[in-house]
Structure formats: structure tokens, C-alpha cells
Figure 1 (cartoon, rainbow, N blue to C red):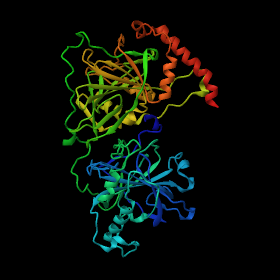
Figure 2: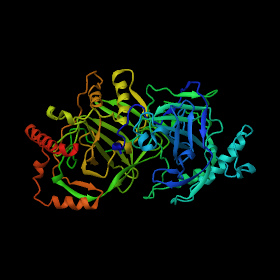
Figure 3: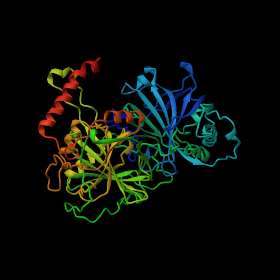
Figure 4: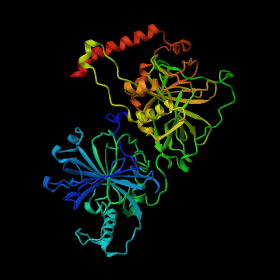
Length: 583
């Protein structure tokens, strides 16, 4: 889903709140933040609560509190984990809460979320950390509505919050949008003057960077049955929605402000931020892949990479590839290994699980390798960057490598300058990795750099169509057998990011302008085209009902003249298509 994040940049959310700066902020002004009807929906990604249609003057809104204006509530939703050690999107001192609620507001003058998304100051989100409590409360205050006034105690407020969250507890996997009455003010903490504030983004596609974030310091205690109800929710494929949180993003030069008397620590966690905890110190290990020395291949070993042609492929119906988050570790380690940029996913248990395709059992992500330009070619064409995701089998010693291409914007001739696009936003997932890689590359005393683990499912993007063939392990030509899955849809990176890659230095201090390997003949190996759409499979089979090319020549590297011809054809096609695209 990388294509779902076109505006991602350097102000992404969530973040790890570890060193806030004190600030004096005026109190919030809440209006219509009382009893209201909402409808619950399992949207396949989260549990969301939509407001029952209200007249303009009745809509809940917030102002003051250091915000840039008045914001109206659009709705609220939840993020949670499959256990109490993870679930929240924002971390406190490197530690997560079991769940987090987001109340999404849009600036009143823009009139709607859709319009507000187009403005840099369009949204304000209140974040509330949730912790489990007892399911029962022997106080009668939990059975009646509590009206907040100067005499209301924190215990009264807590009892009321439990009542409303019991009402919000999902009754099953399928929700029929039944109306539920809640008191909005009693869903958030009693003390609303203690909070963290920073500028960031939405944490769901497209991650637009136009959010004034408020994360309340004090968590709200919810009944355990509410968390159990969240953890039982599943999507249409029967996959649980647990762990639907985005990992923390780099804070960069931003500052987190704190409004309160004294910043608190996480109540149950002793982890330190930006360091590998014991759960994150063990590195994944791959099984043995043979004993042959590089470049001394014995018979039967196939080599990689290869030039993959549609005309050589056998189309077949296949499930899309999918990555599911696992484990409690949310860190990754960036290092330069020889001339390769490598990202390792440590942890006592795997962080990411791969399924789909024709895989009989799940496979776990070990590390990622970066090649610029690409190792593999598609129809004789190479790409500026190829990221190779190396997985090991959960019940076997087989290895699966998934390749994702990234391309930069296409330069058009000067005559078409009016159609030129501006430099696209940087790929935020790659940017965090590249920043760490530059630090490792430029500092001889730094061997590794820890970063928040990137969202692999987002990085891979569209994985519904890919080539599959048997090859060798990356960087070790003769060690196999390895199943290669090369995604056909490329992601984007900016020109400046590509330049940063080419400026990385090896251990001798020399710039690594490229580190790709020459393609090898595919020979008699089968090349499969895996597609998730049955009609497309039929169309490909119909289109490919023609004499096959000689396998010994079909995978041979293209000559410079052939490359130039292909690029000229592509340019001509673009020139012809531009008038239609521009309309």
C-alpha cells in the first residue's frame, strides 16, 4: 500500500514521546461534548464510531488549548494489540499501552473532513491511551450518568467512563451500526489540562501532514471485556484486526510540547526509548542453505537475478501476498554490509509474517537488502532501486525473497515542459532508512543505527501480481533453493532519495554509485506469473497463445540499442497519451 501514502514526509505520526518540552497552554474549551448517539462499525481495519446526524449547532467541537482554531468532531476510532504490551500508536518513553482512541476533528471553517484534508491546518486529533480495569464496579456511580461540575470527583469520572466503554464493547465480529448513547466528555481523561502536543500526520492512508496532535497524559481505564471485544474483531477474510497500529515514526527536528505539572512515566513499563530492549536484541537466523563456496557452483543450483519477460511466463491464479505484524519488538537495525544497505528485524519472535501466493505455510521476515540499480529486469528494463525482503519458513528451511522495485519520476522533453510534474514527496518509509544509512556511512565509529521498524505491508504496496521463479540466495550465487517473488507494481522514491543512496560509502570511504549484479539466464526454469484476478489470468493466457521464444535467448541481456529502442517507444506512447491525461 505504499501508493496509499502520497503525501508522506518528515512530519509523520505516531511518535515516541520521550523528552517533551514544557509549555504554558490555555485550557481547552469543549462545546456539546456531552451525551450523543453514535453508530459502531467494523470497517475491516478498526472499530469506528460515527456520529448520528446532527444539526450544525449541535455538533461537538473543541477550541482553545493552544489549537489554531475551532474544530468539529467527525468521529472516533480505536487501535489495539493482541496483548497488553502493545496496541497504542503513540508510545510513552518507548512503551505502548494496550489500546488508543483517536477523536478526529476538522477545522470548522472548512466545513468537512474532505475539504480540511486539503489544508495544512485542517485537522486536530485527540489521542487517549486505554488501560484495562475490572469488568465489574461495585460503585453505584457506574450505573448512572455523571454530570461534570466542580464537585465531580475523579472516581466519579472513572466509574462513568467504564459504563460508556461497556456500552461501546463490540457484541460480535459483525456490527449492524446500532445506535449507542455515550458521553463524549467522560470517554476522555478527567484531567484534560495535562497533555502532549505536536504537529504530525494521519496514521492511516494517505498520512496527510495536517494534524495538530493532542495526546492526553493520563490513560483512561476501560473494562477488560472492551479490550477482549476489540481483540475478537476480524475482517471479511477472517483475519483478526489486532495489532492495527502504525509503528512510531522519526520525530526529526520536531518538538513535543507538554502541558501539565510533571511529565509521568508509563505506569507499567520500564523500557527506555531508542534502545534495543531484551525482547529486541536477538537477531533472526536463517537456516543452512548448502555448503558450496561462491562461484563454485555444483550441478542443479540455479542463479539469480534474472531478466523476466511476460512472454516466458505461465499465468496462474494466486492469492495476493500479505504481511501481518507479529511480535512485541518494533525496532529495526540499519547497517552497511560490504556494499549493501541492510535492514534487520530483530526480536525474540518474528516481527512480520508473510502469507498468500502459493505458500503452504507462513514465512517470517529476516531482513531487507537494497540494490541500486535493480538486480532483476522486467522485459529488459531495469529500475533505480530494488528492495529484497528475505523470509525464512516457519516449518521448513526454505527461503522466500520478495523483490519490490522503486522508480523515480520520468523526465519529459523540454517541448512538453508544461506537463512536467514537480518533485514528488519523499517516500517516508525509505526516508527513515536512508537517514540512518547516511549516519552509518559517514561515521566510521557507527556500525549500526536503530530506527522504528518500517511498515513492511505499506512498503511492499500492491502485491496482487508478481513473477515467481526458483533462484539462489541474494549475494551468494550458488546457495539455493530460493523462491523469488518479484512484484510487478513499482513504488516511488524521489530523485533526492536516489541521490542519497548513490552517496553512501563503503568501508573504504568510496561512494557506492551502484551495487546491482548482472542478470543470469533463466534457462529452462519455469517462470510463473501469479495474478489474483481470474479474468486477468484468462486474458494473459489468451494473449500468450503464440509461439514461445527460444529460452536460451529470451533471458539474454538487452543490448544498448535495444534499450534505447524500448525507451523511445515508451516516450512516444507518453507523448500520444499526454493530451488525454491532461484533460
